[in-house]
Length: 126
View 1 (cartoon, rainbow, N blue to C red):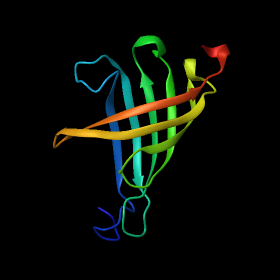
View 2: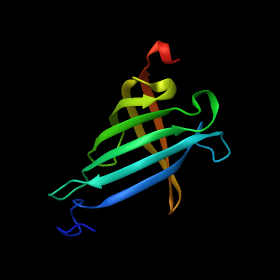
View 3: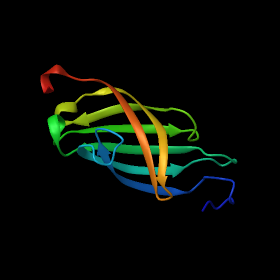
View 4: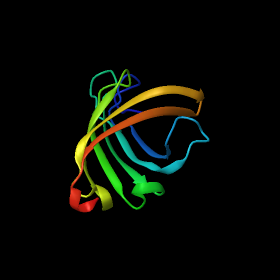
């Protein structure tokens, strides 16, 4: 809860460690984890957050590599765009952007997101 009351996100902190799958179906291939944190930054009412997340690839073509995404989230409506600021392994020196959108809530505890990554990579690492 925010020290400023229920209408502010300021000071709220969340930590994520979610499955990263090829498709939205629970049976689709698990290729890694979506790990990071989200911090509420709005002193005024409304949702305003800063996030830092890593796409940690544990299977497939990019196994052992990561992509780092960080930046603001100004609410959870529509498509959320954030910069890709780097990576490791095959994504060393990567840059680009990500587009994230909510696909649905299959259960009260679960949210399914779709993430599209647009990444420029250093050919020497690939």
